[in-house]
Image 1 (cartoon, helix red, strand yellow):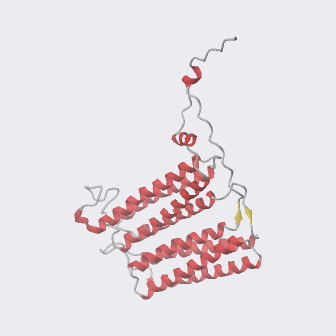
Image 2 (cartoon, rainbow, N blue to C red):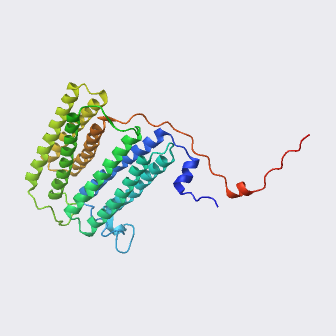
Image 3 (cartoon, one colour):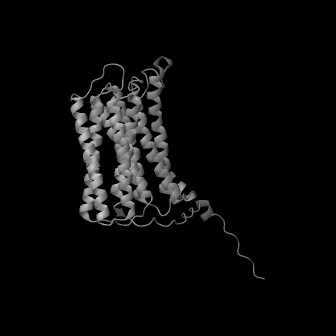
Length: 334
Protein backbone atom coordinates (compact mmCIF):
# COMPACT_ATOMS: atom_id res chain seq x y z
CA UNK A 1 0.00 0.00 0.00
CA UNK A 2 1.56 3.33 -1.01
CA UNK A 3 2.57 5.81 1.66
CA UNK A 4 0.26 8.79 2.04
CA UNK A 5 2.10 12.07 1.43
CA UNK A 6 1.01 15.38 2.93
CA UNK A 7 0.29 18.22 0.46
CA UNK A 8 3.56 20.05 1.22
CA UNK A 9 5.54 16.89 0.44
CA UNK A 10 3.66 16.44 -2.84
CA UNK A 11 4.47 20.02 -3.84
CA UNK A 12 8.12 19.53 -2.87
CA UNK A 13 8.34 16.54 -5.22
CA UNK A 14 7.07 18.56 -8.17
CA UNK A 15 8.39 22.09 -7.63
CA UNK A 16 11.92 23.22 -6.87
CA UNK A 17 11.95 26.98 -6.09
CA UNK A 18 15.23 28.85 -6.24
CA UNK A 19 16.90 30.29 -3.16
CA UNK A 20 16.19 33.76 -4.58
CA UNK A 21 12.46 32.96 -4.76
CA UNK A 22 12.44 31.88 -1.11
CA UNK A 23 14.16 35.13 -0.12
CA UNK A 24 11.68 37.19 -2.14
CA UNK A 25 8.78 35.39 -0.48
CA UNK A 26 10.32 36.14 2.93
CA UNK A 27 10.74 39.80 1.97
CA UNK A 28 7.11 39.93 0.80
CA UNK A 29 6.06 38.78 4.29
CA UNK A 30 8.11 41.64 5.80
CA UNK A 31 6.42 44.15 3.48
CA UNK A 32 2.97 42.82 4.36
CA UNK A 33 3.78 43.00 8.08
CA UNK A 34 4.65 46.69 7.65
CA UNK A 35 1.46 47.28 5.65
CA UNK A 36 -0.59 45.70 8.45
CA UNK A 37 1.00 48.11 10.97
CA UNK A 38 0.31 51.13 8.76
CA UNK A 39 -3.26 50.17 7.85
CA UNK A 40 -3.99 49.36 11.48
CA UNK A 41 -2.88 52.89 12.27
CA UNK A 42 -5.11 54.21 9.49
CA UNK A 43 -8.09 52.49 11.10
CA UNK A 44 -7.42 54.29 14.37
CA UNK A 45 -6.55 57.66 12.82
CA UNK A 46 -9.67 57.69 10.62
CA UNK A 47 -11.84 56.93 13.68
CA UNK A 48 -12.81 53.60 12.11
CA UNK A 49 -11.86 51.36 15.03
CA UNK A 50 -15.52 50.50 15.59
CA UNK A 51 -16.47 50.80 11.93
CA UNK A 52 -17.49 47.16 12.28
CA UNK A 53 -19.47 46.96 15.49
CA UNK A 54 -18.69 43.33 16.31
CA UNK A 55 -16.40 40.41 15.48
CA UNK A 56 -15.95 38.08 13.63
CA UNK A 57 -18.89 39.52 11.66
CA UNK A 58 -18.96 43.19 10.76
CA UNK A 59 -22.43 43.64 12.23
CA UNK A 60 -24.61 41.20 14.18
CA UNK A 61 -26.54 40.50 10.97
CA UNK A 62 -23.91 40.92 8.25
CA UNK A 63 -20.46 39.54 7.56
CA UNK A 64 -19.61 42.58 5.42
CA UNK A 65 -20.18 46.32 6.04
CA UNK A 66 -23.50 47.82 5.04
CA UNK A 67 -24.13 51.09 3.21
CA UNK A 68 -25.33 52.71 6.42
CA UNK A 69 -21.90 52.21 8.00
CA UNK A 70 -20.23 54.54 5.51
CA UNK A 71 -16.50 54.87 4.91
CA UNK A 72 -15.57 53.83 8.46
CA UNK A 73 -17.06 50.40 7.98
CA UNK A 74 -15.20 49.97 4.70
CA UNK A 75 -11.87 50.98 6.25
CA UNK A 76 -12.22 48.62 9.21
CA UNK A 77 -13.45 45.74 7.03
CA UNK A 78 -10.68 46.37 4.49
CA UNK A 79 -8.07 46.09 7.23
CA UNK A 80 -9.60 42.78 8.29
CA UNK A 81 -9.41 41.50 4.71
CA UNK A 82 -5.70 42.34 4.53
CA UNK A 83 -5.18 39.62 7.11
CA UNK A 84 -6.11 37.07 4.44
CA UNK A 85 -3.59 38.59 2.04
CA UNK A 86 -0.95 38.40 4.76
CA UNK A 87 -1.80 34.74 5.41
CA UNK A 88 -1.53 34.00 1.68
CA UNK A 89 1.94 35.56 1.51
CA UNK A 90 3.11 33.67 4.59
CA UNK A 91 1.59 30.48 3.16
CA UNK A 92 3.54 31.00 -0.08
CA UNK A 93 6.74 31.34 1.91
CA UNK A 94 6.04 28.17 3.92
CA UNK A 95 5.38 26.19 0.74
CA UNK A 96 8.49 27.57 -0.98
CA UNK A 97 10.71 26.94 2.05
CA UNK A 98 9.34 23.38 2.37
CA UNK A 99 9.84 22.64 -1.32
CA UNK A 100 13.38 23.97 -1.44
CA UNK A 101 16.16 21.35 -1.39
CA UNK A 102 18.04 20.79 0.81
CA UNK A 103 15.19 21.14 3.28
CA UNK A 104 15.76 23.79 5.99
CA UNK A 105 13.47 23.07 8.91
CA UNK A 106 14.41 26.34 10.64
CA UNK A 107 12.84 28.33 7.80
CA UNK A 108 9.57 26.42 7.79
CA UNK A 109 9.33 26.74 11.57
CA UNK A 110 9.80 30.51 11.28
CA UNK A 111 7.09 30.61 8.62
CA UNK A 112 4.65 28.73 10.83
CA UNK A 113 5.54 31.02 13.74
CA UNK A 114 4.43 33.96 11.60
CA UNK A 115 1.17 32.22 10.76
CA UNK A 116 0.30 31.53 14.40
CA UNK A 117 1.16 35.09 15.41
CA UNK A 118 -1.26 36.33 12.75
CA UNK A 119 -3.98 34.02 14.07
CA UNK A 120 -3.36 35.15 17.64
CA UNK A 121 -3.41 38.80 16.66
CA UNK A 122 -6.68 38.32 14.78
CA UNK A 123 -8.22 37.15 18.05
CA UNK A 124 -6.70 40.13 19.89
CA UNK A 125 -8.18 42.38 17.20
CA UNK A 126 -11.59 40.84 17.77
CA UNK A 127 -11.27 41.39 21.51
CA UNK A 128 -10.32 45.00 20.77
CA UNK A 129 -13.62 45.54 18.99
CA UNK A 130 -15.69 43.59 21.53
CA UNK A 131 -14.22 45.67 24.40
CA UNK A 132 -14.98 48.97 22.68
CA UNK A 133 -11.32 49.79 21.86
CA UNK A 134 -9.91 49.23 25.31
CA UNK A 135 -6.56 51.07 25.05
CA UNK A 136 -4.59 48.29 26.74
CA UNK A 137 -5.93 45.71 24.27
CA UNK A 138 -5.23 48.12 21.41
CA UNK A 139 -1.63 48.40 22.62
CA UNK A 140 -1.36 44.60 22.79
CA UNK A 141 -2.72 44.44 19.23
CA UNK A 142 0.06 46.74 18.00
CA UNK A 143 2.77 44.91 19.96
CA UNK A 144 1.62 41.60 18.46
CA UNK A 145 2.01 43.20 15.01
CA UNK A 146 5.53 44.21 16.04
CA UNK A 147 6.20 40.61 17.10
CA UNK A 148 5.08 39.46 13.66
CA UNK A 149 7.38 42.01 12.02
CA UNK A 150 10.25 40.77 14.20
CA UNK A 151 9.83 37.13 13.16
CA UNK A 152 9.36 38.16 9.51
CA UNK A 153 12.64 40.12 9.52
CA UNK A 154 14.50 37.25 11.19
CA UNK A 155 13.04 34.88 8.57
CA UNK A 156 14.14 37.18 5.74
CA UNK A 157 17.68 37.28 7.15
CA UNK A 158 17.82 33.51 7.66
CA UNK A 159 16.58 32.90 4.11
CA UNK A 160 19.72 34.60 2.79
CA UNK A 161 22.33 32.79 4.90
CA UNK A 162 23.45 29.29 5.73
CA UNK A 163 22.77 26.97 8.65
CA UNK A 164 26.22 26.86 10.21
CA UNK A 165 26.71 27.70 13.87
CA UNK A 166 26.74 31.51 14.23
CA UNK A 167 30.24 32.96 14.04
CA UNK A 168 30.68 36.28 15.83
CA UNK A 169 32.17 39.06 13.70
CA UNK A 170 32.94 41.32 16.67
CA UNK A 171 33.92 40.90 20.31
CA UNK A 172 31.36 40.14 22.99
CA UNK A 173 31.21 43.70 24.46
CA UNK A 174 30.31 45.07 21.03
CA UNK A 175 27.53 42.51 20.66
CA UNK A 176 26.26 43.41 24.12
CA UNK A 177 26.12 47.07 23.07
CA UNK A 178 24.08 46.06 20.01
CA UNK A 179 21.62 44.06 22.12
CA UNK A 180 21.32 46.99 24.52
CA UNK A 181 20.30 49.02 21.48
CA UNK A 182 17.67 46.39 20.64
CA UNK A 183 16.31 46.47 24.21
CA UNK A 184 16.14 50.28 24.26
CA UNK A 185 14.39 50.31 20.88
CA UNK A 186 11.88 47.75 22.12
CA UNK A 187 11.17 49.92 25.17
CA UNK A 188 10.79 52.94 22.86
CA UNK A 189 8.19 51.06 20.80
CA UNK A 190 6.28 49.96 23.91
CA UNK A 191 6.26 53.52 25.22
CA UNK A 192 4.93 54.66 21.86
CA UNK A 193 1.87 52.48 22.36
CA UNK A 194 1.28 54.11 25.76
CA UNK A 195 1.58 57.58 24.20
CA UNK A 196 -0.97 56.57 21.59
CA UNK A 197 -3.26 55.00 24.20
CA UNK A 198 -3.24 58.21 26.24
CA UNK A 199 -3.36 60.65 23.32
CA UNK A 200 -6.24 62.20 21.41
CA UNK A 201 -6.54 59.59 18.63
CA UNK A 202 -8.88 57.15 20.33
CA UNK A 203 -9.84 55.28 17.16
CA UNK A 204 -13.53 56.25 17.23
CA UNK A 205 -15.52 59.49 17.18
CA UNK A 206 -17.42 58.51 20.32
CA UNK A 207 -15.92 58.77 23.80
CA UNK A 208 -13.46 55.91 24.24
CA UNK A 209 -11.56 55.03 27.41
CA UNK A 210 -7.92 56.20 27.40
CA UNK A 211 -4.87 55.08 29.41
CA UNK A 212 -4.91 57.04 32.65
CA UNK A 213 -1.49 58.71 32.49
CA UNK A 214 -0.42 62.29 31.90
CA UNK A 215 -0.01 62.49 28.13
CA UNK A 216 2.64 65.22 28.25
CA UNK A 217 4.76 63.30 30.77
CA UNK A 218 4.61 59.99 28.93
CA UNK A 219 5.45 61.79 25.69
CA UNK A 220 8.53 63.31 27.34
CA UNK A 221 9.60 59.86 28.55
CA UNK A 222 9.16 58.60 25.00
CA UNK A 223 11.40 61.41 23.73
CA UNK A 224 14.00 60.59 26.40
CA UNK A 225 14.18 57.03 25.06
CA UNK A 226 14.61 58.43 21.56
CA UNK A 227 17.76 60.18 22.78
CA UNK A 228 18.95 56.96 24.40
CA UNK A 229 18.46 54.99 21.18
CA UNK A 230 20.21 57.67 19.10
CA UNK A 231 23.08 57.79 21.59
CA UNK A 232 23.50 54.01 21.52
CA UNK A 233 23.44 54.04 17.72
CA UNK A 234 26.21 56.65 17.54
CA UNK A 235 28.23 54.80 20.18
CA UNK A 236 27.88 51.52 18.31
CA UNK A 237 29.01 53.10 15.03
CA UNK A 238 32.17 54.56 16.59
CA UNK A 239 32.84 51.25 18.36
CA UNK A 240 32.54 49.31 15.11
CA UNK A 241 34.99 51.70 13.48
CA UNK A 242 37.40 51.37 16.39
CA UNK A 243 37.45 47.57 16.25
CA UNK A 244 37.62 47.59 12.44
CA UNK A 245 34.42 45.61 12.07
CA UNK A 246 33.35 44.40 8.60
CA UNK A 247 31.64 46.89 6.30
CA UNK A 248 28.17 45.28 6.52
CA UNK A 249 27.55 46.03 10.24
CA UNK A 250 28.81 49.61 9.88
CA UNK A 251 26.55 50.16 6.89
CA UNK A 252 23.58 48.72 8.82
CA UNK A 253 24.23 51.17 11.68
CA UNK A 254 24.39 54.12 9.25
CA UNK A 255 21.07 53.06 7.73
CA UNK A 256 19.57 52.94 11.22
CA UNK A 257 20.88 56.43 12.01
CA UNK A 258 19.35 57.88 8.83
CA UNK A 259 16.02 56.21 9.65
CA UNK A 260 16.14 57.55 13.22
CA UNK A 261 16.87 61.07 11.96
CA UNK A 262 13.87 60.97 9.62
CA UNK A 263 11.68 59.53 12.37
CA UNK A 264 12.81 62.26 14.75
CA UNK A 265 11.85 64.98 12.27
CA UNK A 266 8.41 63.40 11.81
CA UNK A 267 7.97 63.09 15.57
CA UNK A 268 8.68 66.76 16.21
CA UNK A 269 6.47 67.85 13.28
CA UNK A 270 3.51 65.87 14.61
CA UNK A 271 4.03 67.23 18.13
CA UNK A 272 4.25 70.90 17.15
CA UNK A 273 1.42 70.70 14.60
CA UNK A 274 -1.14 69.20 16.99
CA UNK A 275 -0.87 65.53 15.93
CA UNK A 276 -2.45 65.62 12.45
CA UNK A 277 -3.59 62.14 11.45
CA UNK A 278 -1.46 61.89 8.29
CA UNK A 279 1.77 62.80 10.10
CA UNK A 280 0.96 60.37 12.94
CA UNK A 281 0.51 57.68 10.29
CA UNK A 282 3.94 58.48 8.87
CA UNK A 283 5.35 58.19 12.39
CA UNK A 284 3.87 54.69 12.72
CA UNK A 285 5.45 53.72 9.40
CA UNK A 286 8.73 55.15 10.65
CA UNK A 287 8.54 53.14 13.86
CA UNK A 288 8.24 49.92 11.84
CA UNK A 289 11.19 50.87 9.62
CA UNK A 290 13.33 51.81 12.64
CA UNK A 291 12.61 48.43 14.24
CA UNK A 292 13.59 46.64 11.01
CA UNK A 293 16.88 48.57 10.92
CA UNK A 294 17.59 47.79 14.59
CA UNK A 295 17.08 44.06 13.99
CA UNK A 296 19.28 44.17 10.90
CA UNK A 297 22.07 45.79 12.95
CA UNK A 298 21.91 43.06 15.61
CA UNK A 299 21.87 40.24 13.05
CA UNK A 300 24.71 41.74 11.00
CA UNK A 301 27.18 41.02 13.80
CA UNK A 302 27.26 37.27 13.18
CA UNK A 303 27.76 35.03 10.18
CA UNK A 304 26.18 31.63 9.43
CA UNK A 305 28.08 30.81 6.30
CA UNK A 306 26.84 30.55 2.71
CA UNK A 307 23.48 29.22 1.63
CA UNK A 308 23.32 25.42 1.18
CA UNK A 309 23.65 24.45 -2.45
CA UNK A 310 20.43 23.33 -4.07
CA UNK A 311 19.83 19.64 -4.65
CA UNK A 312 17.41 18.02 -7.08
CA UNK A 313 14.09 16.98 -5.62
CA UNK A 314 13.70 13.35 -4.69
CA UNK A 315 12.04 11.30 -7.45
CA UNK A 316 8.40 10.45 -6.88
CA UNK A 317 7.81 6.97 -5.52
CA UNK A 318 6.23 4.57 -8.05
CA UNK A 319 2.57 3.76 -7.64
CA UNK A 320 1.57 0.35 -6.32
CA UNK A 321 0.17 -0.84 -9.62
CA UNK A 322 3.45 0.07 -11.31
CA UNK A 323 5.35 -2.13 -8.87
CA UNK A 324 2.98 -5.13 -8.89
CA UNK A 325 1.84 -4.91 -12.50
CA UNK A 326 2.88 -7.30 -15.26
CA UNK A 327 6.57 -7.22 -16.13
CA UNK A 328 7.73 -7.11 -19.75
CA UNK A 329 8.76 -10.45 -21.18
CA UNK A 330 12.45 -11.13 -21.61
CA UNK A 331 13.70 -10.70 -25.13
CA UNK A 332 14.15 -13.97 -26.95
CA UNK A 333 17.71 -14.95 -27.89
CA UNK A 334 18.55 -15.08 -31.52
